Length: 469
Image 1 (spheres, one colour):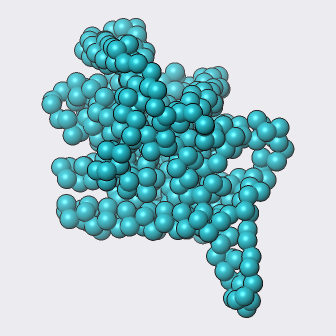
Image 2 (cartoon, one colour):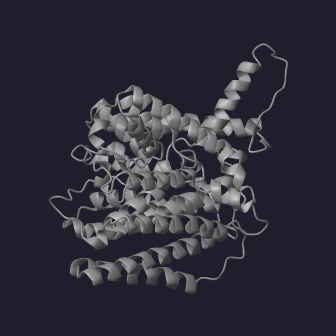
Image 3 (cartoon, rainbow, N blue to C red):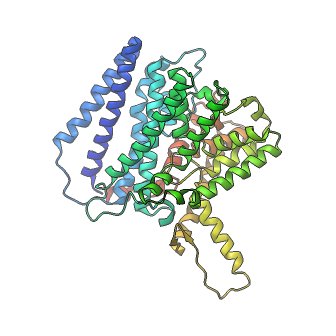
């Protein structure tokens, strides 16, 4: 374990958080929010000073960093990052409720987006609202970066699942090419959010609503927790823009990867794009059969598969949907290189092709057949990796449901909270604020972090020898 490299990377991340604190400080200054002004100023100074001091006092590591060092950074980012991001929420809550503050911070940082706050009784200051948006943005960038670099380097799920043109195992330090991935993912998330926000502003939306809608769609989260229960204000065009944003957020780096290879025309025929279209049609059909109108079914299916949950039509119609149908699309999720949660489309493709291959071989047991994914033949190791992930995902959902049931939640609420947190789908957790107290709240926090670590990535990190090697 290259502890020096890990500490320096975490210090650089701390500087990034200090920049976000500084942005929100300027917002609080512009809006005259004196309480938040001091919190953001103090946090920016303290976190930035600590990160900068560590970088200045430590030398650049001479030892080579490996993929396990990247995994250590990922684990520490989602855990320590949640603690750092909780500081403004502690002041906003008006009481030293650290668990509630950490819940809000982790929920936004993982782009889950669920909030236990009663914004009607305790209106959210603009600077806190912007802080939620900033956490969604940095969380989305981190999710894509970790998937495209750390998980690719660790070969989690097979080379065809996380493999991309922006990262390859370096001969030097593992962290050397990650800056390129950060730049690409940042450009994708930030530029898409800015363009969508500008279009929403052009429709006549208030800046707060435009920011919430754009960031929520691109990061597949819920910046404004009420957006799950409120239909688009500006009508059909508003809903269409949000729909396009959700598609971009669900697909992640696929289009960028295709453009970088000069194969933009082939992007619509990418396996994950085709799998998304097939999943969207299936979920739309199921929602239509459950009683939703066709267009509303399409909007609900898009929002649910993205694990965002933004309402693209009248949300009162969604109450008629059965719980099995509500949970099914969030289990699917989006691209392996996106901020969407869930099992991921790439793994579904690999598993379905493997199952099809097994059926084809039933009559020819001595035959040897292979299949490809994005032009690469998938080995038995790849298949085993995906199967292990599937088992881990199922086990995590089961254990999470059991633990939440033990805290006193009903079975329906326990399974909703377990799958919703693990899939980083905040809309699944709505109307459960009163139930998510104490131990249940802690279970959901762990579930949200586990969802971003893609389950099996956490297993080696739980071994003490992992940190000692």
